[in-house]
Image (cartoon, rainbow, N blue to C red; front, side):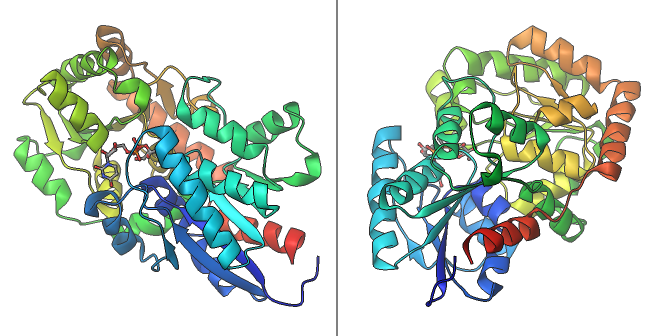
Length: 377
Ligand code: UD1
């Protein structure tokens, strides 16, 4: 559709993963002829180590609109995002809104836009864990069904959207911007001092014995599940020491429950993007429940142990570079240790390398920009 004035496109971000995964897209939309591009930061994540360090590491430009929604219950947080985004969309005459993934910022942004008749582009559309009790799953499903352009990362996601009745013409398979970002920044992260510092503090010489771990999901930070996870990770650490940058949500629950980590687990505060990429590249494997980190591990060829019973990134399991280990004490430890033996570890590393040879990775942001141009300019 032709418009007399430039098309106003607004990209909404608010949390760590959105900063990382939208970093490859923001400069492209800034430079797109015929587009006036705004970046709106909801302020869902706000502390230095959850937010500002990512702007610095990624060289991401400052947002044009900043809401200070901060923490709160899901309803409070989403309500503040809804009203704040609505105000900005009206004030700046926004035509198209871009959101990514599954956070409350994604949902609040998409809902505000859809109700105003602003067209929604959903990046990372069609991913499903099929667990409706997860806040992220609700957010993904709702946002997909109010989007005008659904950018699916792969064919599995596309099939899912078709099965849910989305019109084929509204779907574009574009790849994953998490992989664009990891490929771009992996080289820049090499040689960062964090790797030697961590190895030294754990009395290790070789990163290939080290595991990187993160845990933050709501279902993994309940008083029932978190102690099981800590026990399972403690057992794994008897064989392979672990470095664990602890998310604020997880730290809060550990404090409430008085949970202590094994001395073979090195706790860090949340770390920046480049430090995480440096650790990932040095490590034997990543143990995580994070969506974004799963793809980052694959992008740098590091085997992945998922601390859940399901994953939205089923292609990583199918390709053989990821294994589902669950979140329950001894069962988790047994499954993880079985995959950490030298033969299995080599096999998973090789699977990541082989899959990457044939995957269409690394230019998702370019494909999204092209799809947006084709539909709306
Ligand atoms: C959110 C997303 C999740 C994403 C994750 C990445 C939702 C529903 N979930 O979860 O999909 O993978 O971000 O981190 O949107 N906090 C700080 N400093 C901050 C931000 C948060 O201390 O800068 C603390 C707050 O006390 C807050 C808690 O962390 O209560 C959780 O933050 P919240 O934004 O609610 O969700 P996340 O768990 O980060």
